[in-house]
Amino acid sequence: MLQSAAAVAAGAGAIAIVGCGGSKVVDPPRTPGDAGDPRATDRPDILNPAGPARRGGTLTTANSADFGTFDPHTGVAVASAYFPRIYNALLNQCPTKPEFMYMDLAQSFEIPDDTTYVFKIRPGVRIAPNDLGVPERDLDAEDVRVNLERLRTDAATNQHAFAKQYIASVEATGDTVTVKTQGPYAWFLNRIGLYFNCIAPRELLTGDLARLGAHAAGAGPYRLIKVTEGESARFERNPSYYRRDPDNGD
Image 1 (spheres, rainbow, N blue to C red):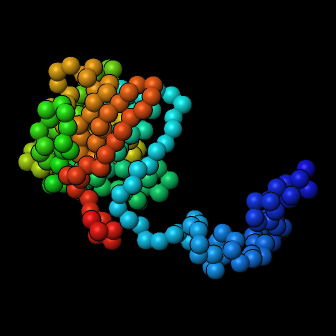
Image 2: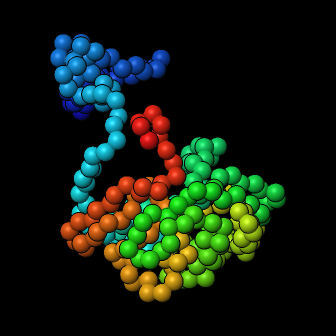
Image 3: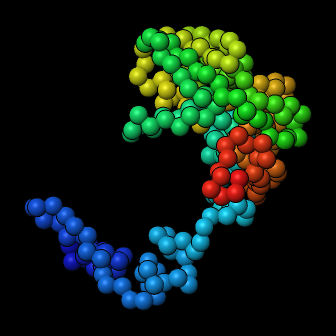
């Protein structure tokens, strides 16, 4: 079995030699033209890209299941993987390195005591053009309040059990949102930032929610253009997305 494992490792391009003193990886010698060789300039490689990144292009992927609904709080099928691309999280905390935070709709936050979280909402997070009549405006503190209240009171939402148990109240004042919890909860920031808790425009959460099966309107990096259930979905870049990448001409 060990001989077989060694043969597989060698075929993969590296042999791992493990002993009592530790381990090291021995790379096989490269010849000019091998992918990864500094002299191989005629084709791209993971560590040797063909050139600088450039704006544009289309990424096509395949999935083996239906999309389901694009309602950011009830969808559980393939569509849920796209929630962070269409909508915004308040923030996202790395579960393995909790000191790492990705700040999205929340520009900053404070924890004045064990049961209080105060989020300052980022200005300029603008809703993308859409076909649902949702105004192309900046998301605000009231959007956050409406979304969290829905999670807390609507048993059909994915995160209802979490929100009902841990969120005692939500108050929107100016550009801040104050969330009071039922008690201390070390995982609160991680849970509030999950993709099932994305913040949608409040106008989207009124009226006939069945329309969200094939439509969406958010302020994330992409906007949903067209869905054919069981066949395809198309997303385009949100022209109003707040983040910019000056290194790539944007």
